[in-house]
Length: 596
Image (tube, rainbow, N blue to C red):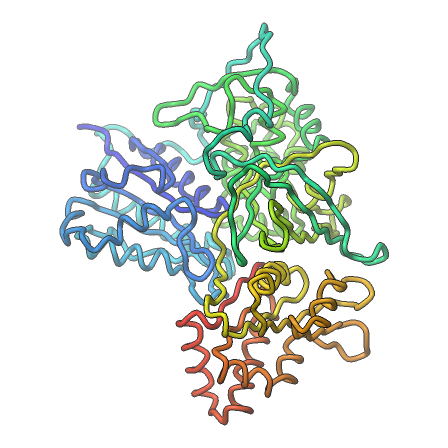
């Protein structure tokens, strides 16, 4: 009997869906399946008609949008010209990863499942809807869903006779084998050479543009607890174009301190060069030059400072020979141990590097071959562009809050990308950052008469700075901004700029400084206060309403305040206000971009 095949396809924005897909791939190998794991846009979707068994793992981004690495697949699959029975030979299962605190919870997975059935595919089980809000996190749904999937899959696609599944703690072969080069005289390409600015091709994730950092300016008072930077890049010669609401993408680098520490733990020479031999079904990542130095791999490619996922502990357990360490690692990688793992890792924001120091015997047995299995790739970070090309030609500006906070661990926690950007100082010599631009979730009206109402507390003001600059350059007034921060004297970003626009009659500005008086005042309070103005703009001037910023309480509170405006000024009932709000959302007159 031939070995059954499984294809696992994923759409992943932050790496979580990819991690889950790779976990399913490992489970398939243990059950003697011939398995391939690929990003949806790396896969030739025309081949789907000849596949027998496929698992789709996908997250949802923005306002119910597919992740970047499945957008082409998505467009193809929803072509009206595809015949109804074109996937009639396909057995499939769809697993969605989402967060039920967002309105479009697992929208992509639900829609994908429905479309596959329309095209004639057979679903082995109902769509899995993993939820970050579940008491046990996403695994509270993923674990039972996978048990049900393997029960169905093995009944339909049994392994060859006599083969029993491998144990979960048995070490699988690595995806890549390292070949260290001892006598290499030629230097491997540097980062700047790999991101050559002379290429005529447009800047993209595969080919970022190497942009010179022009300035890196702190915009909060030196005594303020939060360090926020306004950073400017020169994109002359890149052919990069963008409009208000778009985002700039970049991949951070690990600190040299973390790279040195990992090299010491694993007894690796950071300057040593290597090439990679991929296992069957794998390809060498395009971002890694061949040959490559250990330093380049650890600094620019592997996410060694992230909080490790369950899969990290599963792999470590396979190396453990010390009984105490092995017992703990097996607990952390089991379904029953997820609460314990959350307390140890996620609650404290303990990094993968710190975990390795906590398991010294196991770490001593690790081999370089498993580095790419153990650590995920550094994911790109996105920042709302805070400037307009019409006001600042050949420039991109971003507003970055430098993430740094304390947990019960001795060392303060730091955001990888914001800390890296803050450390770059263009006054000490040329600094270049590889970047590219992509369309954002906010779209501003093309009608020059439409008023634009923007609610952007904190760094949420970034896309609105871009929009206001763009609209003023186009001669458009009707710009209303609600800005909120803690203190007028400490974190009122771009104050002089807003006040100048206000004096020129180009902007109506309302500010909430929450800590400057005894009673805290937030942007939602200002929205209520300006009910008459907002009703006039929305009811009579085709006003568009936007929110950007932290996703905790602010967006819901502002939405409630806006519905209150409809009731107090428009004479609506609560139900009518809800309907009006929903209509604005459907037509694009209400838009939000929030982040955790």
